[in-house]
Image (tube, rainbow, N blue to C red; front, side):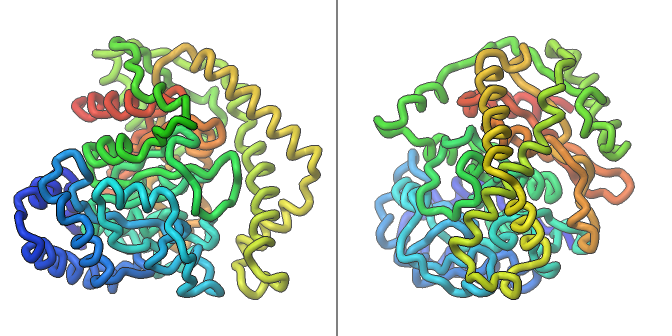
Length: 438
């Protein structure tokens, strides 16, 4: 069953026309009923509360006429992000209905900008890989997975319950679900959005991002959520305009992971490069030796960190509380020495500095967002390696645009665009131009 997505842009226009609080509450009552109906089918949400939504409307009644705010747009919040008024479970059964007692800073930021915290969205266990099969049904075809771990955030948009949701990415947790569900997914520069009040899985990887029904919503929301306090001096870099005649970098089999991409993904990608060549200067990225090592370094940094943080939250007899998938990662992390961890960290930091000076000699890199379209639910743990975690590990912004389809099953997959760190707003604007290419 196909569902019509809720356009952020169109919903904003509709909300701006509502003049009275009573009318707004009536609108949200219908909106909430639709959410309940869809959630019964897709189980994308762990909690919501109509009274809480009404309270936010009362507190933000002056925002109805404020065109610069987030205009009472409803947001889904990934369930590893603390919310004072809704439980935060981290996708772990043993923490069911856990009250954190505080809002994460991003939640307060959304509220302060006039947005509505509508619901918590389900996520993979500890925001890693495992999630129950009935909570990952892709709305475009329920036999297929929606991806992990910002699963509920992606599903909520793809099924037409919400226009926008907040997710996190430590490997590919925003880009992959967005690619599989045919929506927009944006992972900003590491640290662009404040992480205070959010589950830690890795201090150098965890990144807050946005999943949305349109690029307009990503652009407006990100501009509102950027850290712009005096103690974030690099914020000014987000507003620097880049090259008006950009050079676009692309990969081929020099990037090892590309060899294993599905043939239909390669074909769509190469055809799109030919279209780009008409308007832009393209450059093949030949020096990929360091990039080819990053998946191994990511595993070392990720597994070691998870081993540390899971032990802090889950009881000592964790095996009965956690999936075999997460227990294996924890055990693998336990075997990684501190020396090996530091070696990987040094390798990544050197590469970051190198790319800050020269981002492959290009302005943007374009690549398939995932190695395939969505997998059948029973095979969801067998995802092929893609480039998502490369940009997460290096801290570069990346975005998935829903422009490709697998002609064999009509399931979507995205085009990924990455850029130099802090070029986020420029990247989004460039993505708008790319979407015009047919």
